[in-house]
Amino acid sequence: MYTLVQPLIDFLAYLLAMLYEWTQDWGLALLLLTFGVRLLLVRFNLNAGRQQVRTAAAQPELAKLRDTHGSDLAELVRHTSEVNRKYGIRPLAPFAAALLQVPLLMAMYGLLLTHGSTMTTVLLPWMAGLGTADPLHLLPLAAGLLSAAAGLIPLADVPSLGSAFTGTGARLVLGSLLLLVPLAVTWTAPAAVALYWTAGSAFALLERLFYRTAPGRRLLHRGLPAAVRPLT
Image (tube, rainbow, N blue to C red; front, side, top):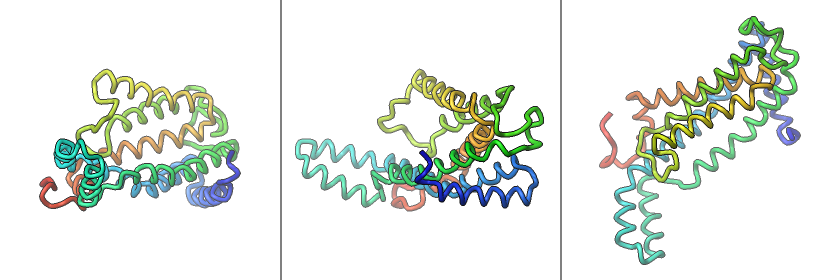
């Protein structure tokens, strides 16, 4: 399964070993590597958030186009493309970014599943090492709760556009899924995987909270036409 990303796994293992030489603790080294990987993905998430902001800002114009050219598909497509260019909307950009992230995330899981058995840490004193499941299940619970908290906060604070999870009941369903999936994956997985998921979810939560601050909003709205750019 991980054959295609084996070179990347080897590179991450090399980085992890370097971090261990510096920290003398596999848990700390794994946390630093996780945050490093997440930092590499920040640009992708920022672009995804910007696409959400730009799509929301363009909705009034797109709605007018649907009213005006709804019966003429060719004209609707042409004018929609013009609006997309005006706002810098790239409909396929989020999917391309997600595809680019897959090899890196696969490599991280491959690394932890193959090397976790040799790792020990003072961060988890109730465990002998990171190669076995957490007997108290504290890490899976933390991973689930942090994943749910991060997932329920959109990257951009804009109205949901055609989302299936807009109502209170639907958001409860989404929150339950975001809680249960990490629990199911990490409950019996090596603690190294649970620690990685917990740290990654904590980073994602902090990232989304940053985009609620004035500097974060300015980053998200950069590149919008001045006429629709909010004052922050």
